[in-house]
Length: 318
Ligand code: ATP
Image 1 (tube, rainbow, N blue to C red):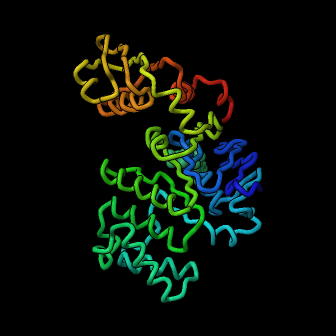
Image 2 (cartoon, rainbow, N blue to C red; image 1 turned 90 degrees about the vertical axis):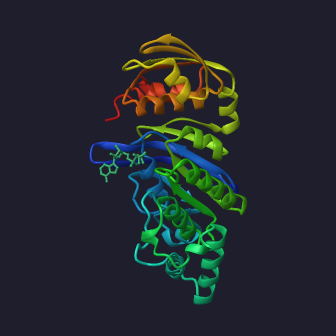
Image 3 (tube, rainbow, N blue to C red; image 1 turned 180 degrees about the horizontal axis):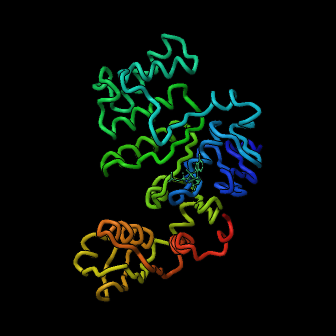
């Protein structure tokens, strides 16, 4: 392993019966990076994170985390990583403080050390006033925050976060993204999965896009920015009629809209944001995006084309 790579994955394969959920995936993550593993539902993100964190076995390939093979030296890896699962693994009946102390105990921290660490984390995560509250009684956003805090109890050098902001309101999601930046600034490498392109771009140094178990593209956010910050044109066909007012109102990245009914040509300020906004606008209206084209060509276009099953890359996988 290169000194700079804290995660190295080569030819990773994982099958569930006839389904190849992760299909010959290669990537590396450098020390100190925030790396986003981006893909739609069912892309294989959770499967990958579970393999990297030792919860699931691989069928083929090489996986090294912090210089250790996860299957051959799981304890060495687990001491160095923190994992924030999609569903919290904390105890609803225990208080926030006890949950942190108990997690510290599981990682072998002594009593004084784990108490000190729990207080530090409660403070960093702005949860000191909830220290005595039962975890089960917290709001969704605070639960997620404590779950992230618990993953840091043993000061890991790599933190895995599976869909960290899924289901959170805008403010809680923003606060959590800020905490993820803080964790990274404090020295941890961050590997996060998300299906939110804007979030990946906002948070991460590098993004990998996974669709149906295969890597579609990978690059720095600067590469992505180059492609998506220009004013662009998006042509879109919805499965039903929409109005210009509704479209403009719901999609701030849309500068102007020409069209009628279900077919629109839009001038947009940031293509990636506009596409994300158009898709959530359609979802909110109970409509489908039947066709969407962007110009200039962007990662989003590749992403969406493949999502719609038009790419030969993903054909014949199942
Ligand atoms: P999501 O964003 O919905 O969480 P994901 O990208 O994390 O999706 P995975 O959960 O890794 O994707 O799933 C990848 C594929 O493997 C999906 O088609 C899923 O249905 C399938 N899969 C996942 N776990 C199992 C399992 N235990 N048994 C059978 N199939 C599974």
